Amino acid sequence: MLFTHAHLITMEPCENGFLTIADGFLQVRDGKICKIGSMTDCPEKDCAEECIDLEGKTVYPGFIDAHCHMGLAEEGLNFEGDDLNEITDPVTPHLRGIDAINPLNKSFEEAVNAAVTTVVTGPGSANAIGGQFAAIKTYGRNIDRMILKEPVAMKFALGENPKNCYNDKSETPMTRMATAALMREQLKKTERYYEDICKAEEDEDTDPPDFDAKCDALLPVIKRELKAHFHCHRADDIFTAIRIAKEFNLDYVLVHCTEGHLIAQDLAQEGAKAITGPLMTTRTKPELRNATDANPGVLSKNGVMTAICTDYNVMPIGLLPICAGMAVREGMDYMQALAAITIHAAQIVGIEDRVGSLKEGKDADFSVFSADPLTLAAKPEMVCVDGKIVKS
Image (cartoon, rainbow, N blue to C red):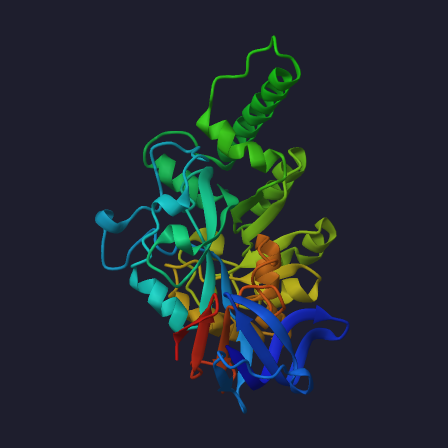
């Protein structure tokens, strides 16, 4: 397909911020963007190519929710549809989110209708180490055909959630100290496991260690091949996440980072990256008492690369662009808010080679709007996923 005469908000970083093309074209082939540029450079329409004139309309990259639990906890169901947390063991790195995701959940349709074309989804925060997240597209019926990257991250959780879940069972961890200790213990076991594997590979007379599913799942984490996503709200929990990440040389991301606005300069000095949100919610537990919708803007202005998430099903997935709009209302630069649900979200998660901006070679995931997409009344007039028009 060839899309012509569009205002292209590419979200590709450039010297003056992000590249925009006032009167541009977008050519799609085999699910990828094969050409993009000004109409002055537009190729002639191929005889077998469909041409769609988008004059007066604006094209954006597909929006990305960098942290949610879509497909793992179904709306309208209780235990029968809740596969979010395995609260029988506080250390479960071997769990894979894709084994619980139901793409037929209504939320996937709602995501597409809001131009959210990629979500990063996986286990909840009941366990100190919860399991593996996946980056998936929001259009499809077979999860294995929707995967963009899996695993994309390992979930760790600090603060109230592990404490509350296991205090009710009178089991470890019942304190923040125990939660951190469990993380260190399992990461240390994994380091030893890796050392034994390496010794066996170097010396044929040395037997490899017995297979350990938990250590095996954490191997790419300690090798910095897989990001560690730390659920953390309070400032002290945020610093604990950074402390543990430094101890084990982890490639880490701060998820929620609710009190980040109180320590923004410290986080910038650490080179931390944050996925903030959900916004527009009430303070439902003590560690949210300092929550503010100004958080992503404060972090961004202090030099912290910031994404915005819904944490679905805490918030409906369709409100992702509205959350970005709320951040703008509370002081965030408009283009930084747009980046927080496109290119910065992709960069923080590590999927920017495929999505997050409009660029030759990237997946043809984009949306078409006639109004500002970060406003409540705006709806996409067209949404494409992998080069296929899935909403028009």
